[in-house]
Image (cartoon, rainbow, N blue to C red):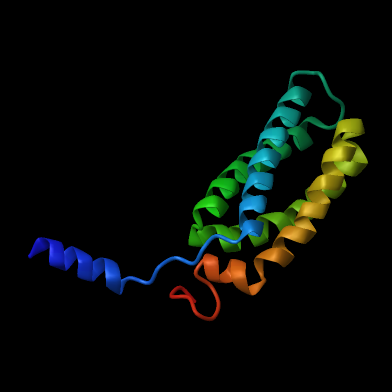
Length: 142
């Protein structure tokens, strides 16, 4: 009896769509960018870099957000879709600040952050990623 009920519950739930390869890529990019941001900001706080201290703290915060988003993207957490769009759009401004004030390392990181801030939100609004995160047509979380 219990086995039958469990099977019925499993069959009635909608299966999660297969993770698109692009979502896997942005999960890796977000986590790697998060780690690099944390190390970059920490190196500035340790006196090994140039640029404003306040920018280093902001970069570290975005690093923590990047690690969190990487995990959310990988698992297909519904919150990660909207959070990713918002955080990456905001990160364009941080990327520009890094280009202007961040020295040589900040220049490279700022360029990468600005490009990611444009490309990732655009990708997340495509049909397959939206469906994977439970958004859009054919999903249960619209």
